[in-house]
Picture 1 (spheres, one colour):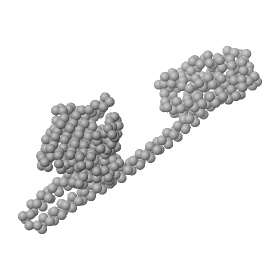
Picture 2: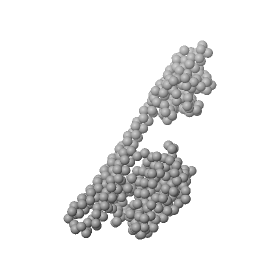
Picture 3: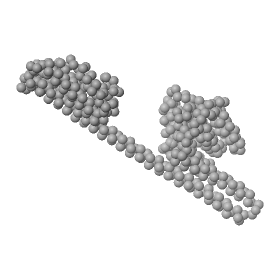
Picture 4: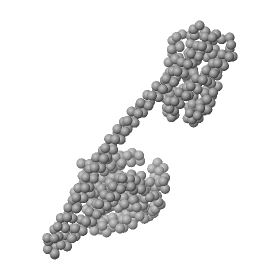
Length: 437
């Protein structure tokens, strides 16, 4: 007897399954939660757990009640569609393929048990009714497993392709960083060779000049040795930072006191060049951080600002800030020097430009260069390069690279606003607190 010869009895069975829907779903969830391989099931709400399965059961009941082949095919296609969506849902909730298949197996057993109970309660049923129902159930669960597995496999392929693209982009970025780093070290080696050459030349000249002019050459030699020592020290610090050998030592300290003392110690250097040096900010500002490394950042920026400013002077400011409920504090070093000219661009400037733009977007500030911005386009550390001011000696890039590396270590942002002929402002924004303190 075919299925279409007993439509009333199959429709009655479908109606019974509809009435027993909640009990079937509850039994399915209980079976899943009792399965030690399905720990994720217990973390889902009832609605999340059931997901598209009620729609699958609706389609199954319509298939049992169908009187025409077209209705049967339509119900079967709906079952496949909902089963595929169920597989997608389980993927998003962290299921693997085995877990999805085990859940389908539990659902199959729960529905089969319901069919057997129905058959026991209706002993006068035609044999073909239950045989056809069991066949339809087997087909339902088989298609459910297949569609879930297919959707799962496609998602795995998409995710794998996305990971591959991410890895390729990361590799390209790492290669670019390595090229930039190699260039920076070549320039540092060139500067080092030049300074060693000066020391060697002056030393040789000292042996062949009259005693009365040796004092001038000794002064030149001392200056070269001091400069050489500073360059070697900077290279050592930079290499330690790049190797990850520097660690942050977080403690509570008053950054206002530290910065005022630093500015006071740098005042003679500014006075020697006929420059003003102003320190402005709260009298006290208690924060957490690595006081030694923060002082190194401020000192490097301040020394560069004084060294390359010919007229006017330098202003150092600090203050607490708050953005989106997050408390930070910022340090600004502003000079009236020659500024930077954008042309050949160094990796440092590229990074500064990008970091500045990102920080402005996060804080909701107008981007540099917009009609609302008061600053010129800001350089940030990976993409454009800066031409040195006319009076700038080689080697400054190392000091700024050290500043940038320490900022990364301290979770601080480094921004630069500059305008050729009018000066530059370096802005460093630090966290007020660290979770690892």
